[in-house]
Amino acid sequence: MPQSTKHILLLSSWYPTAENPFLGNFVQRNAELLGSKFQVSVITIEPSKTVSKITLSDENDGNLRTITVLFPEGNRFQNWTRKHKAFKKGLTQIESVHLIIGHVLLPNAWMFLEATRRKKAPLIWVEHGSYFRSELNKKWSPYEKWLLRRIVAISKEIVAVSETLKSDLKPFTDGKNISIIGNHIDEKLFTFEVKERTNTIKFLHVSTLDENVKNPKGIFEACFLLKEKNPNFELTVISDGDYEHWERLIQELDLQNQVRFVGPLNWHEIPKYYHQADAFVLFSEYETFSIVLAEALATGTPIISTNVGIAKGLSEDVIELVERSNVQELQTKMLAFINSELKFDSDTILAEGTQFYSTSILKKWDALIEKYAR
Image 1 (cartoon, rainbow, N blue to C red):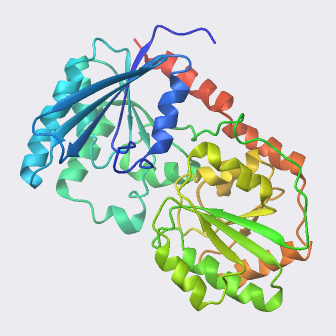
Image 2 (cartoon, rainbow, N blue to C red; image 1 turned 60 degrees about the horizontal axis):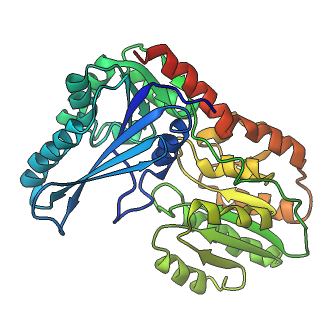
């Protein structure tokens, strides 16, 4: 693909670090995607116990440049002042930019403000966070509310990753237009393979297992009920979180023969589990996007899910929806799938997934970048 001379500075409140390599990995993938066409520079700042002064590393991977600035970890006040100094040091390494793309408002969107002030470039704010939900936005601090107002005021464009998030954002954006550009999957990685159905039905779940959002307990309780009706199933759970206490629950529920845990895994290691799965299960209370649903579509895997994230916009031909927290209904849908009462066409599922291909998402970003990059 011909390279553009446009230079983009990409910043994010969430980005993978040495201590947390999965934090904001979807933002890193966005940087890599944009780097396939544009010049992209990323600045990340991290507290560290291994340095005694602000330390900078600078790495290039094709058109993607990543500047990592470490600062000595201290108390709350010291961290505040040091991270601001670290970010300013990172900015000095960047020459002129045509556009700034800032991902995730909280907690570090002050970087977006500082960068736009110093680099005199337009800002596109991209939101992924779940903190705009009604039950969470009431807990915002005065500083967070001020930061939101400032980012809304200076953003040339606001981007949400789904209709769900756009709806949650709308009351806080002063009537500004909110575009929707979802996260992407790598269609060369998440490919289709014909599923060989056996007497044991294989379900798959991929998540952080965050108890407050993903509701893993509900999934395991549904499996407990399902085992009484038909024990001929397996559930593979892939997670980059700590699942030791969930393994104990599985033992208590006597589901060791039905449920297994895997992970953490890198992105390229995950597709084979979709290829082996007969259906994907998601039981979240809330999602702003849910990349795992896009991955399921790209691999031709039927979905059983609550109506969250991008699930709201999917055709009923590719997904079976269940009510949030309704364990009994989840069990019923899983049993119906085992009994072949729910049937899906792989070609239809694959067609639905093309909207999240890297090529499709890059086209949307290309149009937006060309609109604002000076």
